[in-house]
Length: 334
Image 1 (cartoon, rainbow, N blue to C red):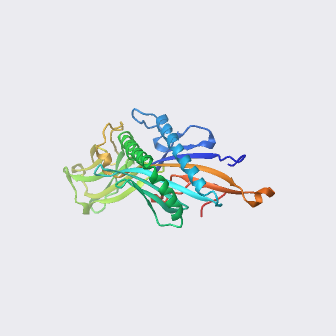
Image 2 (image 1 turned 30 degrees about the vertical axis):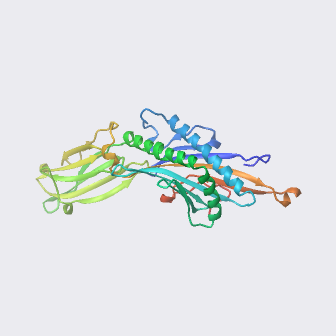
Image 3 (image 1 turned 60 degrees about the vertical axis):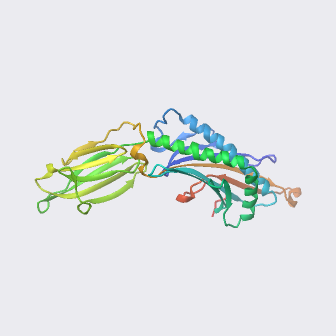
């Protein structure tokens, strides 16, 4: 908040892995960044959580510098404004990576970076004039944008690949049977608590997959802790259970078990040391960083002892997933 005419900033940092919060930091709480959710105890390979925290601290310097520039351009304007920055990386099933870097102003598209041309594009919005000022400044300092993009494309995508290697939770598998009906039994194969969500569950007869039309899938559902569950059921002739089995494949590990109602199968629970099938699903990492600054702007009434506060926010959020941005409690963004 504004004290003695100076601008003080508050720094937030949130890291998201496939929409799940895994890292949080708030400078006002005066404590180190903490890992969150099911990933809090997971290893990071040769690195540590401290390394991740240090990288976020470096990024915060860039955010504060951008906020200072926006404050300068908005010197003669009052009111509250919100500047959001979105950057992250996706790894697609063909193992290709795609990083993204965009800005939003007061909830509208503002600027987007195009690595092919190494330039910024002003998006249509009510703040196009301000966006053009920012673009011209950044274009004049193209090396800075190029270097920062290299960090987003290289460091963040590299981090995502490392997480794919170490952050896997293999499913617990169980087979249940319903009561016999007209000489057939309904059997269900359950897979619980796995991550990532890409999984195959198939019923086999004498080692051969049953047709899709004879199997019913329950879809994939998420737990609050970030893991998933699914089930697949089919009907089999009573008395021929030994000829049927459930096959589960997840992140390069496979398990097949004969129908034995009430017994459980367990895929290996060790951390995988390879990327493999884990990259078959789109994986996304997103870092949300927010800097809050409250700046007092002098007006004609200042001489009479009053003033107007201009609140500026800069943050990284996830508009592609409609995740709420961090905003000042006293000035909710509507």
